[in-house]
Image 1 (cartoon, helix red, strand yellow):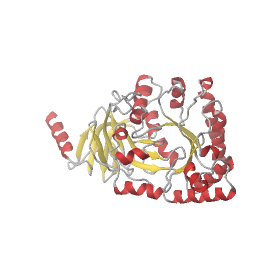
Image 2 (cartoon, one colour):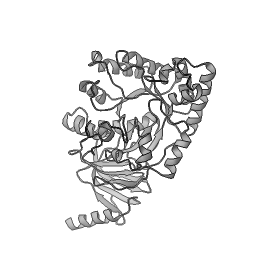
Image 3 (cartoon, rainbow, N blue to C red):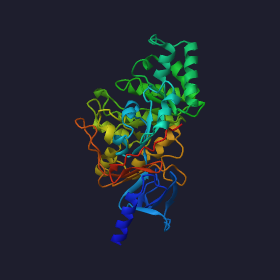
Image 4 (cartoon, rainbow, N blue to C red):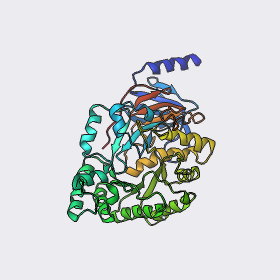
Length: 411
């Protein structure tokens, strides 16, 4: 039996990275839907998931035995700042080594001036990860108002900004992002933001916002975001939710209560959190956000950004909050990294392990997965991620990058 397994492993390693007909066997499957884990196999064929469950592989299949390991959908980072880093590092090792298979760019109002121009280079020279983008409120504001942005926009300027948002949505943006805690977004009025969110909503997008104040007025700022979503009839995603004022520490429940109340009133609102305590954020509050059912995991970092989350956000949750603290079940944590973020911005065929879905897959050791990054070593590679597939192509093989770049520019 041991000889057969060795031969299978040798055959697998000798294959080119694109897996045309590969079956992951004997794994523990967590499919991204909150369904309880189960033992089974996953077939990868032509970049898609062909079968999931207790099927019997055929004699012609190439097998990879992942006994003792978790098979999960690839992680989706809704708040990723790799825009500039990808230009220099298409291999995206800091991302794929922690299991990220899709990075959503353009957060905090910083989306590209032209979505199509931004995406085309990734069509021609793909990165190792899939990318998606948002249209930036700050970007369209600068395009229309130029240097004269320190004021409320006129009705005509709002109309022209809306035209830019519409073009971006037609070109494949997944939503409108704002950074209201910084210029020029901070000068945007409620009227302006609602008008632009209404344009975006016609194309099924999500309003993704870094709220105006994460300090003493954080609750009022979240209420503003919810009101924009309510008026525009659009989903709202609060980026990088946190409480920075020490006087407000410990009031996580009050902040989250605004989300719960809005959801009960019919507003589709959620948030994402970067799972590291910082000098202006307490560990207790981070934990409170991490465990909330409508808060997804995100890095708020990316390629070349000197923060521990750039290389460790997702393994940190699986190692610290799941295995060590037992604050979350593995199923709930995986859902926060896969199916839930995919649903927040309408990513189709990603975020779940299901027949016909794109074969973005992470295979990891739940007993070993852990971040190693720190403020001193922000790009230290995490432990425990064994295999990563992007669109059916192996990008991490036995913990090491393969050098393949199978990512898609998603639209």
